[in-house]
Structures are given as structure tokens and as C-alpha cells.
Length: 316
Image (tube, rainbow, N blue to C red; front, top):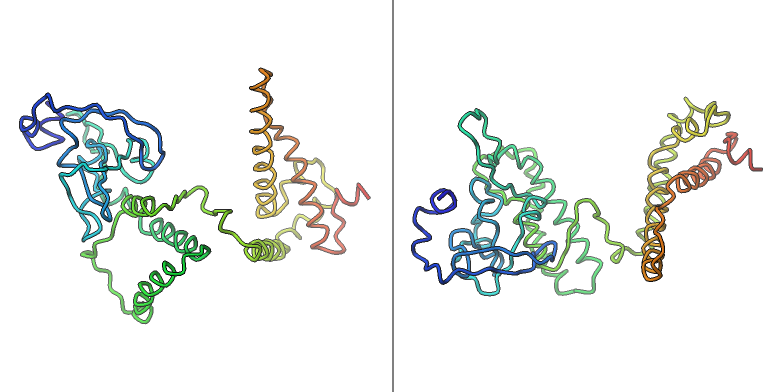
């Protein structure tokens, strides 16, 4: 009865014969995994949408209070059609910004469910970030027509630059939720991952040169802070104390580089060992830490001439 009278319009199910019920097996739009779910007829007529011309269906229980997906101008509209519908599973619905409704008991004073305000405080920044990476993806592609269309559409937006100081906050501005933006980008064949934003396929040698410049400048800027601990860099009590002084930008760079290489290597070795029915070995993170320490020491020794960095001096 909860599903019938609270998640949906009262007695909505009565308009559909039980013989029209379907157990679906569909790919999720985001994770591409097979998901199985039940519906009374081909789709839910109250929670199906058209997003940039494509039919989208999300979990009904995610629409009880959460407004992550709702009608938004011409981009998102309600539909009763299920033709070629794309489905979004509950896991991805939450991971991409939606909120599954949690039933609240009578004794609970504060409703923990989505209020469409505090739960989306970072949506605007994250949505702009996602669009930025999509634009960069198009920029590095060979799609000249796409590039021209996007540039033509973006240039008029620059008119607000001159209005920056005079803009008054307007609570009536309708801002699309991040979830809508991510659906649109996914339908446009762009997979935005907030935890892994750089797409190595789209990076050019110039990008890596600029990364090198940025890293070098960060190390130089850290000189004053390193001076305070210069004695530790030159004569540490322990290797752990020695490592803690390194600039985080340098450590993270080599940490990401080496861990990624070792993980890729491990995947190949694991496949071979599984085929031979041999025991798998974990990644030796202690070895990686030692290598990071070595490479970071060499860079610091190059960056700060005259400093007697402990490890290079010991190995000399």
C-alpha cells in the first residue's frame, strides 16, 4: 500500500492490469551493469522523463522527495513513453547526486531525507566542473563542427562578466541539479568521474610539460616552508621523519605515478597467475614508498643547490 498510495498517485496501479506487469533486465546508463526490476506495465508513467530527447527512468523511491531529476525547461520533460528507455539503478542514482527516500517513523523529529536545499549545496560548482571537463574533451577532439557550435553558444554568456559587480542574488533563478547535467553528459558519450577527472586519452605532450612546470613552481614555492625543516632534510633521525618533510605535491605526483604503474602491472600478472592457478600476491606498498622517497629526494637535491639532502648525499 505504501508503494501504491504514497510513492505514486493513489490507485494509480488500478489503471493497469496485473497481466501487464513486467520484470525488466536492463543496463544501467551509468555503471552499465545489468539490473533487474519490476514494473506495472512497460514503465512508471509518473517517474519517467525525456532528457535531451532520450527516455530516462529512475527509481520511483528516489523521487518521493528528492528533486535531482525533474522538469527543467526543454531539456527535461515528463513522459509516459518507455520506448528505448535508459534506466538508472539505485546505486548510481545516489552516487550521481540523487537521494533514495528513507521511511521515517513516528518518533523521529527531524526528517533525514532530501530537502532539495542543503543536500545540493555543492551542485553548482560540481556541475560547472563537469561541463568544464566536457568542453576540454571536445576541445582536444577532432570534432570541428562541435567546437564551433559550443564556442558560438558560450560567447554570449561572457556578457555577464561586465555585470559581475552588479549581480544581485535572485532566489528565483532555476539552476539544474548536478544529476541532470551528468545524465546529459553521459548521453553525449562523455563519462565524467569526479574522482578521476583527467582523461589521459585527451592529454597532449604540451599538457604534460605544463604539469611539469606547475609541479616545479609548487616545489619552489615550498622552499620557505622547507627551510624551517632543513636540518631534518639534511640529517633526519628516521626515514619516516625524513619523508614527512617532503612537499605534498611532489609526494602525491610520484605516489600516483608509481601506484598506477604497479596496479596495471599487477592486473596482467594476476591474469596469468589465475590461468596457471597460482596464488596472487598483493602490491608491495612499502616498496613504492621507498621509491617515492628516492625520487622526491633527487628532485629536492636538484631544486635546492647547496642543500645537503640526506639520501642523495648518503648514496654519493
